Structure formats: C-alpha cells, structure tokens
Length: 216
Image 1: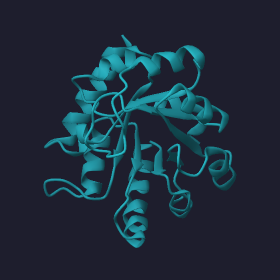
Image 2 (image 1 turned 180 degrees about the vertical axis):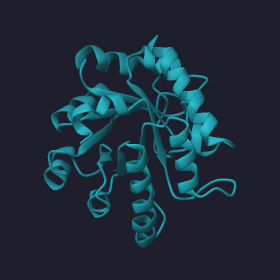
Image 3 (image 1 turned 135 degrees about the vertical axis):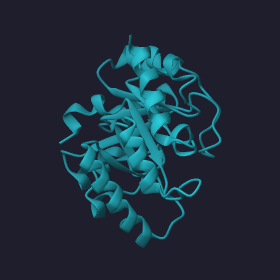
C-alpha cells in the first residue's frame, strides 16, 4: 500500500517506544503527533514484555491506519508480522533487508540504517526502500548511534542514488532540520524532538514547517 510511494511519507518520521512522557501514554503522544502532521511512525521498543508490545503496538497500528500513515516496527520482523505492520526498519547488524523481504512480502516497506557509504551500498544491495542516515547530529536517545557524521553522507547518497528515499536521523529538531533537507533527505526521523516535548502536536507541526521550508 505505502511501499511504492514511500518517499512522500518520510517528511516527519516519529520513532518511539511505549514508555510515554509526562503522564502521557505512548498512544496519547502518537495521536497528538499525528494531529500535528507526523507522516510515519516506527515502534522501537527494546525493554517491554512482548505481550505488551503486541497489545499496545496493535493500538498504534490502528491509530496510524486511522490517519493513513505507515506504521513500521524496528528490527523485529516477527513483531511486524504479528501486528500486520506496514514494514520494518533494520540496522546493519539486524536481519538483512533481503531476508526481511522474504518474510514480509513484496508490498511491505524495508528501511535500513546507514552511517557510511559502504553501509549505504550494502543497504541498497539488500533492496532498501529507504535509508535512515546518521547520526547526523549528536544524540543521547540511541546509545549505539556513534559519533555524529553531519549532512555530507546524505548529499553523497543523493548524488549516487537520486531516487532512494532517505531520512536523516540523530539529534534532529526544528532548529537544525533545514540543512538535512537541503542536503537531499526526504525528511527527518526524530524521537526526543516530539516525544519529550510538553506539546507533541505543536512540536510536530513546527518540525513539518521546517521540513517544508528546507524544500523551498
């Protein structure tokens, strides 16, 4: 459903777990963020019991369907299958994209992380529908993100594979999103810039405005 046109859904890509923030549940945050213009959601939950991931993940999936945006699962192809998610996002050390494709089928989205041009080459060979490139800026959200790489790799990938979908990830918020878009990304993947804000709806709306400004 979404795979053939995935680039249009990459503008404001929310990556979230189930922990909630400041009394808001993950579902509350997701709904507010979608109201504010989030265009894709990825569930990246590493700690919660699988039963909870399935239960709350199903609610997130239904919410995304209500808003007409893709819902992806990080790493866990089995969870993506159980939830009938719209795809998965895998890292360089996770199940290879080509193997994920065999399990999920041709109509699902496969996103793959890349932090070097060599990793981008591997991701492309694995049949990635889009690349998550970073960490662009310094981030505390993902402990294994590595040192920030800036926007140069995004530009290099854009020149080499102009038609691949691409999001910058890592330390991005409304204050620094524009250079990521101007380097060639279709959008930005964020966690704290929306999830950790007191008003996720407003944060998402502001970020979308900066994405649009970056394209102008």
